[in-house]
Image 1 (tube, rainbow, N blue to C red):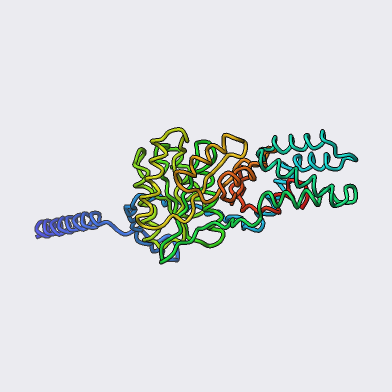
Image 2 (cartoon, rainbow, N blue to C red):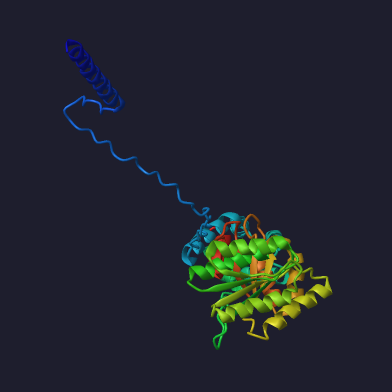
Length: 378
């Protein structure tokens, strides 16, 4: 009995021992959460989603609009140019006044006066005419009692002829633009003159189209295009070597289509002794006039060329009926008398004078102001 009891007790103990071991195995297999380390729950934000950069279109370079220049007004341009003319041409007037102010006006003095005038390119016939009038007035009006400067001024103004119509004909009729044809030999400053005239017209609020008909010189076309960009006017051009007449035709057509006030056509520098080139210039004028009349033909002359300029003037006048003269490079020389000579030769007025390289160094010609500048006055 005691043996059976002992066996039963051992069996119960064995069962309890096995149960305890199983319980320990189960608890050791679970992963217990860590104990909190602080009194505040920290909730980490969810990870931020980083967006991939959107594909951007390549940057397109936008060309800057050209800065338009504001041309100088006519009034201020005239004041400045008169001052410059007085500084460059005053030597001629001073020379004449010095001779006329002598105590005795003998034959040697009058011959010296003639020499001064001829050197200034006044021309033989106008010089003789002026000297004769001066001799008569100074003798008849009292010699020493008369103001030699006043007499000289009055006679020079008469010689330059203040009654000539010097207005630029830049307006058309019946809805067509005025057409200005600019001609002259190489080196006189034609293309530059075209650009400067455009500036004058723009300053007067006129719409302008430029025609680059000097198609045999790429530099001339580019130069004119630059002038157009500076003041904001259209420039009609063609490939190098294009028929100049076709460019002139298209220029006038553009002026008509856009209702421009004025079309200015630059032409190639023609050699006056080349008949073929001169014939071509006549063709340019004829082609233009199929659409609109040419209202002004300006001959650009270099004031320093003297009698050679007179030869040029005669030939161009025969081909295209010149209506006005532009004298360039009048600064820095005492050749102001060319104004008188060329007007007498052609019977047409000097309408514009150029006195420098600046963009606004071109102004309408005024007879009295010109003579005052020659005499060093205002």
